Image (tube, rainbow, N blue to C red; front, side):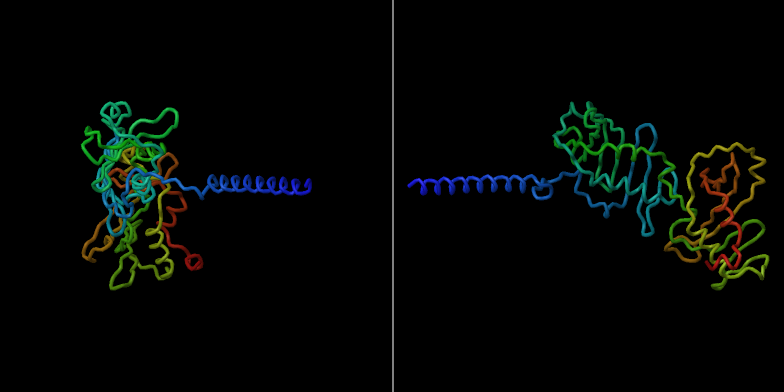
Length: 312
């Protein structure tokens, strides 16, 4: 009889242990990352690949307008220049920013969180977004995707990663592409230092003639112009040299057909080569925008490489 009771107690103990193990495994499965999914919320459902226009209004520092073309993004205001793709990507990414908290926007909230007069307003296509103040505890930004009248109470306020605010208010210089030529443009001729390189009937001709200049060196020279990017772009340039010195500066005039245009459509960029405060700048005097480059880059843009180097 005692043996039977011992068996029953042993079975009960084993079953109890199994029940505990099952409960523990269930808890592990429930809380293990990746197995118990929560639905993430986003600032909007807008597909970033479908964004074609951007208007960025920054309180106290001006407005930037951009438009997407087949060969990339271009600023429309305050300049008409190729845009920096990396900076554009940070702006379009706003549409899919993760929302960490959401609540309905009451009228009193708009002033409280600086959304009535936003610190930054962004239009991505026809969708309008407002960026307000920072949450002092979570260090996240109050943001709103305005789907209805801002005072209607039907909009939702979100808390998103605060870094985007500083990206949206970045210096205008960072929105301009550092490339010296528009993307996928076709060079037609370059004039610099008493030389002229022109394409005629599919062949490049150098004036004055230089029989010792191999075609590989010319091809490399053109490639440098098409691929070089400045280390920095500077708007509203202020120079330490006099106007007289400026007029004596060497220059490069480069003409090209923009992407998608006919060969008869020619645009020209005129760069002055300025050595200012130990910096080399390619200055566009028409818009007062300068592109900073190194001495080696300047050499690549104004000299032909020897034959043995151009083939490497």
